[in-house]
Amino acid sequence: MSAQSAAQELREYCELSLRHSYDQYEKHGTLHEKAAEGFRDPTIWDHRWIPDEFDVTEARLHPVHEAFSPTQKLAWNHLEWCMEYSAVAQGERQIVVLNNYAVASYRHTLDCVVELERRESYEETDHIACFKMVIEACHTRYFPADTDPLWSVPASGLTNPTLNRAMRKAMGILGEYLLGSNFPTLFFLARGMKTHGFKPFENAIARYGEGHKATRMIAYLHRLDESRHMATSLNLARLSTTLLDALPKDNRLLFEMAVNACFPTGRSHYYPISYWRKVLDTAAVYEDVPTHAKAELLRHMEARLTANISHLHQVQIPITRQANKRIVEESGLSLPMKRLFVEILRRDPAYACTIDAVELPEG
Image (cartoon, rainbow, N blue to C red; front, top):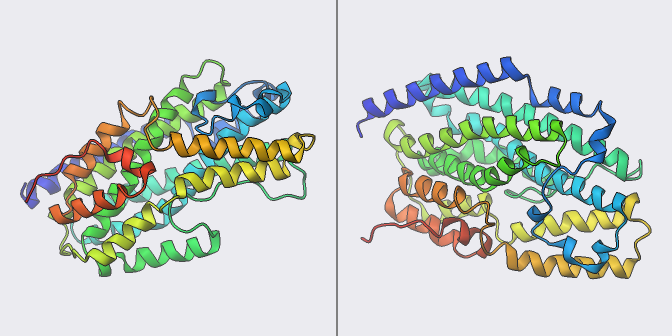
């Protein structure tokens, strides 16, 4: 594809995506507004918010969880929502910082890309405010007042929040210098894959019959935004190398460090277990559960999580598998860098299953 035709394709996409975003927000308002409206209804606490089978730790199958009171089981479901969406919010915090760095070079070629990323950063900021409000509401309801609101460890970057903030800013500043056009290509490739992984779950949450109308609406509106973001990621991962003046820098060591920052080894296992350990240790709603019972439940959860994250959930197979195949194969990375990307992800079973459909040519 020529640079001219790629620029025209991307310009048309940006204009369409921006129009859809403004139309949606004009029609429905922000996610934060929907959350505020929903939590004015006290019956929201009487509903389950997500299907039980999305808990890949399978806590519900252990006798300790089975012995929980109805209030404790409902709280677990609400806190599962908080874990999933706090992980999403942590990723969106990374995106808000890195979006504008990743498209900085487009100011000289296609300013509409910069405009689109400003708009997507606005959407991500709205999402974070929405999720933060729900998480804080759950903290008020289920935890002692003197404990900090519970957020999951980020699924990418560093586990320490302060160091993570510094690292993502440094990555943004140095990204193009170190990786050239591979920086925006890799950023949007990773961003797209992260979105592909959660999208199937969110589709089901939006349709979940037992859910409250507010939690269903939050999922519905968030997936509309993320569907556009998926398309943005695909287009920019595919076209950045063609369009940008910066040359791709195929430095294997730097590239591997960047990929490992996006997909940290063992993180898919660490962040859920660390979250639930804090829940069982600090939540007032579980204070009457004996310590030995909590330990037994956590051992069960760790074992089931290890087994379950090595393959895609059944709801992910139709979307995640094919979407990841397409974004990797069509990305603007050179063939050696695509091979290295796949090689790195295959080292961790939790990531390997997400790219098992990718097929790269020999040579």
